[in-house]
Image 1 (cartoon, rainbow over the protein chains, first blue to last red):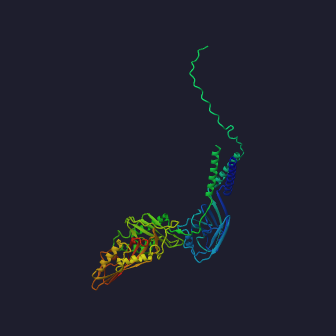
Image 2: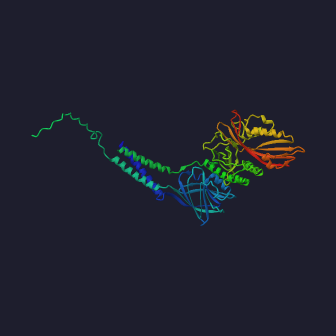
Amino acid sequence: MRRLGGIALIVLGVLGVLLGAALAVGFGPDDRIGTGPHRLSTPGQAIVTAPEALAFSGPRVELTVTSAEPGRPLFLGVGHDVDVRDFLGETPRTRIDTIELPWRVTTTDLPGGGAPKGAPEDPRWWLTEAQGRGQAVLTWRLPDSAADLVILDPDGGDGLTVDVTAAVLAPGVFVVGLAVAVLGLGVVIFGWAVLTTRVAPHGLHARRPDPPAPAPAREPVAPERGE
Amino acid sequence: MSRRLLVGLTGLVAFALLAGACAVPQRKDTSIVSKPAATPVTARTIVADYNEVRARADETLDGSLLPEVEGGELLDIDQGAYFVSVRVDKREGYGLLRLAPPQQVVSPRFEAYPMWFVAMARDEVSGNKRVAVFERADSVSPWLMTMAPETTPGAILPPVVTDSTGAAVTVLPDDDTGTGISPAAALRRYTGALAPGTDVDDDFFASDAFLIQTRRFQETQGSLPFADFQQTWTAQRPEFALRVEGGGLLVFGTVTRRDSYRVQTNSYIDWDDNADTAAYLPGRVFRSADLDYAHQLLLYVPPAGSGRARLIGQYGGVVDGQGF
């Protein structure tokens, strides 16, 4: 039983060391793990993700988009698919159908003869949005609902080429990773100690001695006078 | 001692593993590409936006501001109310509306625009409640209030059936499942009960103040000695209907009405003591007059064979008039 417990502790500790080290090394001191820059381009007016491309929810993500043309205005927005589809209408665009990490995307060019229904910064339904000249940075938490990411030039015009860098942000994960690794190491050491320490057989000296019998009551003795 | 340490260490590592697992992305169901028209929070904002514009419009009785926040027949009714108020110089009591934050928000889910939702809120001016329908035509259009039947202060909507996501279940205009009568047919039937003549004894709907008032008005106008009076009612197709628990329906519908007067020779009509008509028909009418009204109704239709349908709310007014 003791041997089994020791082995379990060592396994658990090794898992902790591996997990903690992986977190600390993967995210690094800036608490982020990323990929990019990766080039994306469209002959149309916008680059848009399909709901299936953002198939996960939960983590906080930072997206840095840099235009291939320096100084070109960029708009980044994340909105519900229903809103984004309606807003873009027949706008010619490139749809990102799937994203596989570290980075592999499949895209579909959607031709069209229209334009977005208005200035992209006007609607209030964007979950998050950002603008910039030459570069824009967007940070948001991946939502539970079917959301699309939109990259476009708010001034319009066909053809857009950008470089995209994506990162998952996890504040404090580096410290947590280190702590888990150290803790795991401690568990390994303790497990090793449990496994290797010899314990005397039960009853040999672990048994408590019987309590001494109470002394018989005695009458008080009068002090004797000096001899 | 060693056992306690073992348990403690195991707990710590398990906690760390769990904490790490929480940061792992969760795969979501991307097959649900629909959204509720509004949440209670967004509905509150939309009502606040409505109040802001409405307050400016009420202040100046400027109907040109109303298209920012109203649409459909409701816009016609409220612009008509402003028109009447200005024309007859009775600024108090006409058209003013200030909604409290919604007490109840009922929102279906939509895969595309247009979308709509229902908000029940107390009118702080009259104390009554309004069951307002807000519509949005597309992603860049404003939310417009397009229906707002008025109910009593104590009115409560029957519980609306919701789907697994909490969204209200809608009913198509011609769907008669469960009730044996579709929303469109129910509205036509109520319109039939309003119209003078054949269906006046139809007891499908329970009697209500609007029916009684309408019939009384028809009697008084029909007995005018110097003019022939006719009233016609037309039901529009009801686009908003909700399924309620137990299988019944809530139907929002608009009906229009035309009051026609044909004045007999050597007679005239003077509406000087009737504000609505006096606004549209100032002075005397010697030959004929037509007044157009719009009324927005909220009907409850019970499941087939379980009681009578009834009117829950109504709001209407004159929207046009001509005479000579």
